[in-house]
Length: 504
Image 1 (cartoon, rainbow, N blue to C red):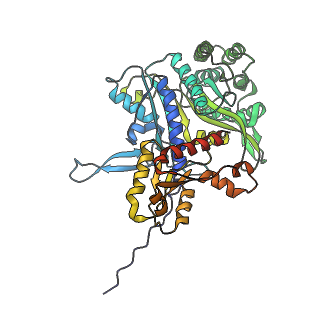
Image 2 (image 1 turned 180 degrees about the vertical axis):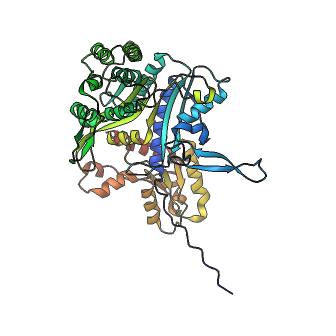
């Protein structure tokens, strides 16, 4: 009889494009999201948790390739349970973002929801795209949207809320800027250029505008014309516009003046007689007036025509939160941190479900990027605080140790009993070190008889071990013997002392 083939063990490896998050990172993200939710809630937005799975039909145009519904998203086809032959049913997919589910939810429940509907949502999204450095297939988004009003007050409010959110989580004023533009203004520029809506050159012009930050005015001028040599010496073909035809785009990109009024004057010249362009400028003026009335100056929110994010998707105002402080890249070069959030008005999204246009505006914060920014600013603790560890000197007295832990927890102090093999006390302290524990509690047989306990300040002990020259630390004991009845009080004193040292 043939011997059964042994099944190979599965590889313990994270799937490509995904990663695992451990205690410190999860805790930091949870705290940051709680702070963001606090601001959103303060502004009157309600939480929404929609399904992580949507039909591909509902995701619709957000897929990179609608002819291949499983491209760009993680998708599968269900079996039709009502078909006796088991024919394939609907295509399902993990959500690609948090906006498409909102459109479905609003269309489905609009008769029960208040109008306008203001909601925020936080959670993971999945994209079946090629992973790269810092680019994962699962990541967190943090959105807030207002659906059901065309008022520019809604757009202005979203921008002001974004400003408040950045400051609330620890990005100080002066280290960020919310930049605002309007898609209608660009549409007016394209009209002034004589490019109809069905002209294929419109997309080429949009792609060229998006390169303004990299190649500057001269580079855009060349790319709108015959083309240019890039940094590597390769020749890039241009859009093929005549110099005069390209002028409205260049006027648009260089229209930012010293004041909002000057910027608006320059934009009106760039769009010429275009009705939609003039409408977009009026909307920007309205938003600017609302910012000024609420006390949000140019140091926080700025009308900036150079912002062109997502201009193929948005239908009105667009905005982007940029962090302006410098960091060093992997090659040691200085650069600005860059964008951590953005959004705008998208009035055509719900129409896919209802047949009627429903105005909407929203923002999305890149959670991982914002966390990285907070780490750069030193606004996140580099070393997490673990639980107080009650060591086990006598395994037959586990009830005594559990009693200590219960007392600490009852007083709001994070604590645990060591549950490994207690034979080697050194291993218990190594465990406490791995857990970043601030305090260890020790009660052996001798301490039990005398009614006392030993409480070890692990943070101070580590500092003493690092350097024998720290005289200011040497003057303070790192281990205390106190009556058993003073367990909670002494632990609380040590934790307070550690917190004071950290602040200092």
